[in-house]
Image (cartoon, rainbow, N blue to C red; front, side, top):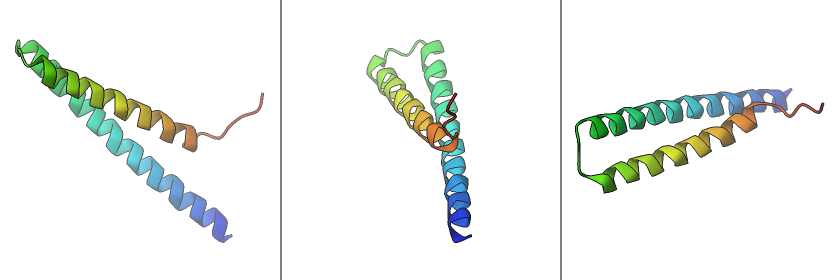
Amino acid sequence: MRRKALIRVNQQELTKRLELLRSEHRDLDAAILALTESGSSDQLQIARLKKRKLLLKDRMALIEDQLIPDIIA
């Protein structure tokens, strides 16, 4: 019984973390778009934002893998 409660809490924590990462990912996307559309010449800043966005995408994929159970076909 206690194990199920622990698993449920862990899933809730992972879901919350996933939502935070998704929000940050969307914010970075908007920031990159704004910098690009404004004609910003700060390519280094844009590259850093894109790199951070890719890192977030990888982290989101890891969490999603943990939340979705493996199904043996």
